Structure formats: C-alpha cells, structure tokens
Amino acid sequence: MLQTRKEDLAGARKPTAFGDMRGWIDALRAAGELHEVNSEVDWNIELGTIMRLAQGPGTGKALLFDNIKDYNKKTSRCRRIFGSSLNSYRRIAMMLGLPPDTHPRELVKIGRTLLTGSIPPKIVATGPVKQNILKGKDVDLTAFPAPWWNRVDGGRYLQTYGGCVTQDPETGVMNVGVYRGMVADKTHMPILMWRAQHIGHHYTAWQNGGKAEMPIAIAMGWEPALAFVGGSPVPKGVCEYDVIGAIRGAPVELTKCETNDLYVPAAAEIVIEGFLGLDPKTYLMEGPYAEFTGYVAGDKAPKPTIRVTCITHRDDPILRGTIEGSMPGSYSENAVTSSIMRAATAWNVLDRSGVPSVTDVWCPPVQAGINVLIRMKQSYRNQAKQAANALWGSSAAHVRYKHVTVVDDDIDIHDYAAVDWAIANRVNAGENDIVIMPATFGLGLDPSTRKRDRNPALFGTGKWNRLLIDATMNLDYDPDPDFGGARFPPTVWPEQADVDKAYARWSELGLGKPTG
Ligand SMILES: Cc1cc2nc3c(=O)[nH]c(=O)nc-3n(C[C@H](O)[C@H](O)[C@H](O)COP(=O)(O)O)c2cc1C
Image (cartoon, rainbow, N blue to C red; front, side, top):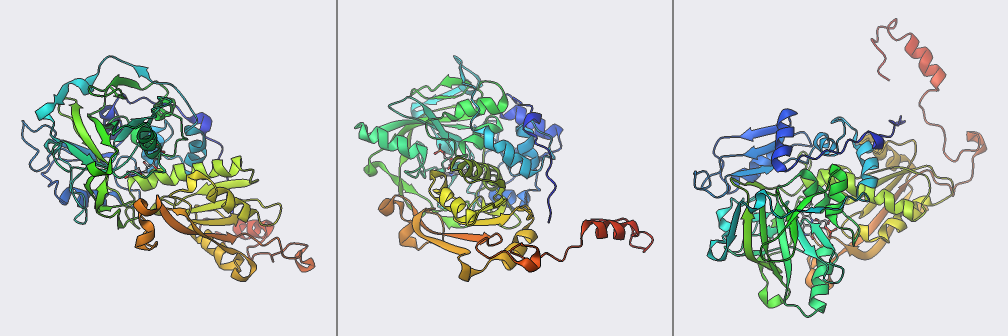
C-alpha cells in the first residue's frame, strides 16, 4: 500500500512527429503494437464486435483492417480502417515520446502540462489530403466503409475519432473536438454536440450573429495527437492545433478547405467539409449509439446536421475509427486517454483552486473519469470537501467527476484494494464522510439519471447528484493519547526493523526470496 514514487519523467519526453497516420502505423508495426486483419470482415456489426472483443483491458493491439466486405475492390474509394491505437498506456507513452513502460501515474503528471504547450501551425498550400477532391454529385459519404459498430446503434457512424474543426466567428480561433457523426445520406451527417462543449459555444456565437449555418470540417486520420487532443479538455480560446504542435515538437502543417475557410492537417487521410445547420428545422435524426459509459445512450432525436459540400482524401485512404463504450475487460480509446487527461485536468483544477498537498490523482480507465480518486497529505480538517467543491465548481466537471473519493497519502490510488480498504475502514457516513451535492449539471448520457433529466433540449445538459467519499482519517476526531496523539490506531503492518529481521531469515525458513 505504501507507495514509492518514481522520479519525474516530464524532462524525459522526446516529442516525436510521425508525419501522418501512416507514419504512426509504421511506428506501431515496428514496435510490435499493431495487428493487421487481412481476412474479409463485414462493416456491418462484425468489425465493431471484433474491435470491442480485441481491445481487452488495455492489453489489445492497434488494429488495421484491410479487407472490408463491400469495400474491398480495386475500385473501392476507401478500403481500410484503423483503430484501437490509443487504448493502451504503452502507445500513449509512444505518442508522447516516452519509454513505452512509463507508468500511468507518470503519464498523468506529464498530462498536467501537455495542454498548455504551444507551437503554432504552419499553413501550406496543399498536401496529400488534396490528392482527391470530390464536390457536387461526387460527394458520397456512403463510399466510405462506415461501420455499423454495434447492433444497438441507430445507424452507420463514419465520424467516431476524427477532429471536428469549427471557428469562433469573433476571434477567428479554431477549435478541434471529437463529436460523433452518423451517415444520414450521401451528403448529410447529423452529429451529437452539447452546448457546453466548445463547438456548442461556436454554434451559439454563429447563431447570435444571425447566420443559418456555420462552417465545419472533420479531419479523419492523422497523427495520434489529433484525436488525443481533440478529445481532451483544452481550455476555451486555445487552439488544439497549437497544443498538438507542442506534443509532437513541430508545427502541424495545415491546408485550407476547398469550400469553407477552415484549416485541416495537409496529410490527413480524409476530410469532410461543409456547413452545420443552426436552424432546428434542418436537424436530422441521429442515435442512439453505444456510448462511453458502456451503455446505449444519446436517444434517437433530431440533431444539428452537416451539409457536406466537399470531401478530400489521400489516394487509397485509411478511415480512422474507434469503438466507443468502456466496460470491465474492454477499455475504449476514449476511456484510456480520458483516464490520463481527466485526472491531469482535475489535478490542475485542484492546484489552481488552492487545494494544498495533493500527491496523486487518478481516474481508472474502466469509467473514463466519471469517478476520480484523489490522494493528499491533509494538514487541516475537511480538505477533502475543499477538493470536491473545487472540482464540482469547475467547468471541467461538466461530464466528469460525479463521484470523488479522497484518501490519505499512505494509500496508492492505482491499487483498487488499497482504496477499498480505506473506504471500508476510514469512512463513517454519520460523521460527514459521505456528502451529496444534489442537482448539479452532469452527463446527459448517464443511464442512472432519470430519462427526462437527460434531455439536453429541455435542460441544456444532464443532471447529476454528485458524491464525495471522504476516506481520509477524520481530523475532526480528538488526538488519542493511546495512539501517541494520532487520530487513528496504528495498522497491523510490522515495524520496518521487524520486517527486515524477518526477511533476513526468509530463505533459512524455507520461504524463498522475500517478495515485499
Ligand atoms: C471517441 C470520442 C467521442 C466523443 N463523442 C462526443 C460527442 O459525440 N459529443 C460531444 O459533445 N463530445 C464527445 N466527446 C468528448 C469531446 O470530444 C471532449 O469533451 C472534448 O474536450 C470536446 O472538445 P472541446 O473541449 O473543444 O469542446 C467524445 C470524445 C471522444 C474521445
């Protein structure tokens, strides 16, 4: 349970530019992190099922499917799908230019500064993504092998992990986020977009400017940092392209879209360009979808829809896709990346709010940051409450941090048994260790919230009753003279001198090598 800390690895990062998604795939292949599926696989349910089963609890390899039913002819516009690349801490470390065995604890620490780096992008006249430019009647979303990922989905999702680019009409700053998109027909893609997300802020700003549509582009398939940063809570007003540049240590080369003024990575595999309708009359039916909670969520409802005006793509493009929804034994890319970045963000929020002595923060990957664990060295009473209030008062808590558990510094929050032990023996519900913060904003996809309260059209967002489990030793208790002035008794673990003495005799006692 007692934790030895590894040294800080932030300085060990060697930012790596892979060039494009093909460079990243080559790097994964060379590292033995890629599995190529050459046998024919059906885009209809089968591919999604294989991806979900193969990902394991962060143990599966990245997958490249190159023989997709109905899309495997020489003449097929797109014949390959690449996924499962970021649902492993080894591959996240590789992306960041770190040793592959870097512990997630270190990744969280490094994650704390990743979103504040900035190398501005470089504008280039053209690039591989312009090898094929499809406009007018040539625009056809169905020419791409969008999987019907799960039997429960409401349609075929082409956009699962592409960077969705929009622009603030006042400042001109672009935002890149990951927002799911379903194929409605050849030229229309409804997306799921909450008003509290940065795309939602842009949506409102364009609406307030009296516009009927706003420009949008989705860049699918580039270096891993595109989706990683797109799905991370980059602060408002900061352009994700700047952050991606800092992660890879070189500017992102951007080229202008053909039919609007947005910029996309010049070496992206596929770019969908168009305009997002701001008038509810233009909304098309979208959902439901297997969501990140591991439940079917986001009801079938009319949603803001992209009117596609152009598709550009590389020769023989590779579609980037991801299977959403994390469950025990099968961790999605969103879950694993979120476990790092939502923990790092929470730690930064705590620091900015002045919560002292936080020594570790962790969001176990199976739930992607809905639960957060905080480890701290308390110096005054009820610091755990200060921590929970700081998190819940921040915009970072919009779809995360429903349950906050705080433990003392002797508990390793990467060890479920240690956390469970602390909850069992240090929590007293009658002494204010359990605190409910009722009726806050929350996740509209959480099935534990009543269906009516999940309706973003009625309420703008979901509704969460949040919970603090204060599993620290209660400093409200009087110091106990029997325990040398401590509030809690000593644990049964032997003193170090006794441990050393026992281990010195270990092999003589026939117990082999000491494991402690
Ligand atoms: C695979 C994946 C799918 C996502 N789908 C959606 C979605 O459909 N709608 C949404 O609002 N956020 C979705 N998100 C979360 C956003 O990408 C995330 O909150 C991001 O920070 C939003 O960008 P922003 O901070 O620029 O608003 C998804 C994230 C990932 C990784």
